[in-house]
Length: 413
Ligand SMILES: Cc1cc2nc3c(=O)[nH]c(=O)nc-3n(C[C@H](O)[C@H](O)[C@H](O)COP(=O)(O)OP(=O)(O)OC[C@H]3O[C@@H](n4cnc5c(N)ncnc54)[C@H](O)[C@@H]3O)c2cc1C
Image (tube, rainbow, N blue to C red; front, side, top):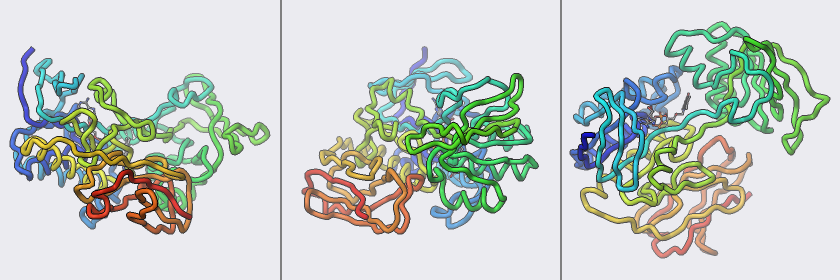
């Protein structure tokens, strides 16, 4: 098998991979290769044809493809090499990749690798949905792909399980395409998606949202004919007397995303249980020197603008690692306390300013996110509304953390 050598290889041509490539090139790195399994660059944004992307980055409401195109144009303008229609099959800890391309199998030896593989959706099997297995059950993303990219209408009478953003967006999309969306059912007592999506995709179209309610059985032999739904108690157990049948021909699942970390695991990258993504330092380097991670494969983001911003930092870090040969100096752990589900990066050097990204465990109002080193308060961010669906970012200045022993992140109500 042919082996080629590259300074930096980026796996994934979505918004994370593109932004990382552009910033690494702007930092002076010349030998960059971006590998993408799809025919075109842009990642999952290519199927997100609604607008609302780029409000932070470009101060404009763009569609997903428009947002992606700005980075694709910049990527090509900088003359960066891309290898589309090529899938990375394996990565080892020496940073050797095996890829399958149209020309056959190739080995690539990289000096640094950026993991930017995005995430995939949880399926009916992943949530053990009981009942028959008729046609008409799709993940919301698969439905988005059929309707938006392949012009295939997938059903007329729709039920959506899960109020994640993709499900909410598909509720509106299916309505605009002429289907009747019966309802969205959500197991949790609060919506999982952004508040703006609940308003713009459900309330504005009169689509009901039933909280603390789930689907307990699928009906139908060849095609779905209905689902049994019921309310759940605080332990998420079905309340039998609330069971009812909702006739429908299509069920869309919007029940969570899983970072695509199979390659990372193969290379020995340490993953965090709370994010299912890599454990990284403040340069987004994993436990394997020269292997970096960003975007949805690192942690599931709600806004693509944050993906691009994070990935640009990762591109700079990878360029600095290769050009200056700097090793990780991160020794200060960053840990979560009450009401914080995860925080990232998990280790910092204290030598540079750092933005911590975190999510809370439950909805809260009028509370502060506090970063402290023992009794010493380092940063505080007051928020009117805190919700697990909305990633919180808090900046910490290097001058406040250079001598820190451990950063603890908590919520104070
Ligand atoms: C179905 C779906 C719909 C979404 N809809 C919205 C939305 O409407 N609004 C919104 O703000 N956000 C949405 N998101 C979130 C969105 O994914 C992120 O904001 C952003 O696209 C993440 O960028 P990324 O580059 O990390 O991942 P992606 O955009 O997923 O890009 C990852 C890329 O890596 C490639 N790849 C993966 N593995 C390999 C491999 N082994 N070899 C080669 N290439 C590989 C993939 O083909 C893909 O192109 C959606 C996510 C999903 C999964």
